[in-house]
Image 1 (cartoon, rainbow, N blue to C red):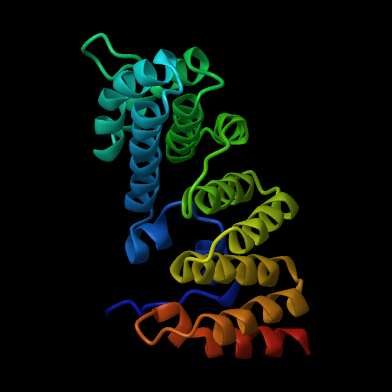
Image 2: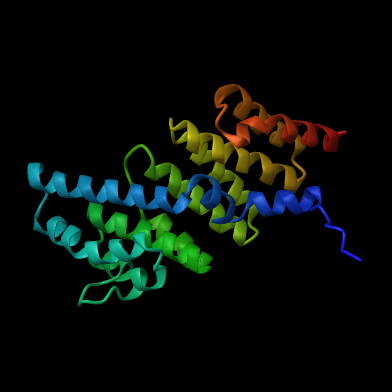
Length: 231
């Protein structure tokens, strides 16, 4: 007799979607590509900043030194990018310390944090992400979101919620804002903060309408589920 397929419970669904650092966003929105894109943008910005504004040889040296680690990062070789890219180049861990105080050093700290996040070392992920201070339209949001993911994995849900909220407020990018609103809602729902969950879902529905987004198309389901649990 064939076994009956058992559907996941609501709690299991919320757990799976609210604080997994890679699964849902990687599958739906290609998180790693966004992380990489943000890193590349900052690296290129750092290079042009040096070239045209003459910020100093240390920044230029750091940008040149980082390309090997960046290449491995783009290939999801997080351990090698972090510790030993080969060819005599330093990994992000060493680069973050060596070029501390430069834009490239900040980027190295950010990338080191993302590497640690994917390697499951959440304490170091938080440490390096906190040291970074990236600029731009995407990277600050992704930094807050990555911190939220790391704290979620540590089951420090209060800190995770705080950083997801910051991620939403740090961007005008509708895709990222909607994604972190969903995470904010689902983690609040998991924590029993039903009113806060509904508020996040309602904001996702009204502020970021997007027919091509599965999260937006299904937001009514999230609201209905949270309202039912709130009774």
